[in-house]
Length: 505
Image 1 (tube, rainbow, N blue to C red):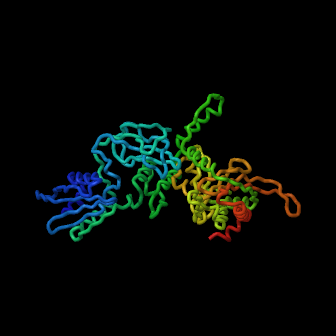
Image 2: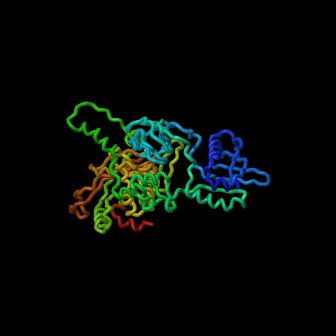
Image 3: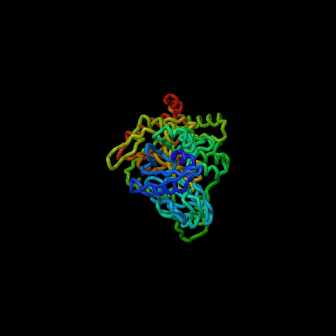
């Protein structure tokens, strides 16, 4: 009966709440003193003993009475550590660890001001690490007491971002799935000696999403049920909400990008005074990666490719295109043909571990594309190119380019690359000598496609669309012969793209 009473009241009894908090705060003792719980109706008063045990992930609550014994497992409390929750007053909100190896982030902008009232999971600010742009959300409901940093500051992990005043301890979060499981437990409690309940994913109207994602959709004025889901088991991801908001025209270029342009523009005009610019975000990441690249012994292999067939193929794709959102370019075909060549030359799709003298041949072709953005150079990558069609590569490339421009790339977008393409020809130049993006072992610089005179076998001159490529390789792992054979195969696929059909699975 005590089990049923507790679940029916959904832990609203204040004495039970205090007992639960004491259980969370006992980080050393495996068993806290017993707590007396009084519940009942119609003037009846029942006393029992509730013992709370500590486990790494799950709360265990047991009830002991003569001739009666049962255990409650998997109580529906949030996994958020309650040990840090004060009874009230002002609390510090630190910058949490945003990714592996991240020690500091740049504060881009605030979504709140001092004196604002905030809800749980409401976005507080946006920060940028070396790897991605991240929104920091509130863990508490309260009022902004003090903001300690301004946009542009470099904040160390663990350093306090702001202070929030709260009135009381937030109640344990109970999900809708957990509530349904509690209801089912009520009918089984009397006949079972071991009851389990594991909170499920938060859902709204049958849609699976996290509270932070629902709040993001609400921020853009979107109905979460209308957002197409791409996550596992139909789960809505942050990228899904942003993509849908972009389709609706609700996302604009961030103010931080315009601010950086305004910082540089005075240097281009008639000003002659020195000015110091602090490197931020992706620019700081480029300093680190290029410093590592300078230690790698590079060698370069230059080759020319006849792109006449590639030009015709692109024209054909564009003529048959019925989707105005899709723009066909040369790059997706070059990416797919590169993946075909990597299949027979896996050494170029590898990573080198200098400490153990090991070369890891990567099974997936995660091809990175260097992109120049208002926030600096960034290299997102297209995952599993070997399994994608040219159309799928075109769509994914378009998504990465859009997100790179608005500084919304996720950590997954810019991690896990296996080889990099630098399309300098999109801006200008015949070819360049790019530096390897460590721990990868190869990078390819592509120049612009230009018409130049070529000699036919019979001696006649004809115009040809030619592109110059320059493969930069790590000479500790790759030799010239391996790179030359790889280039020959890639060149064959580019000059005769119909061969892609023979090798596509």
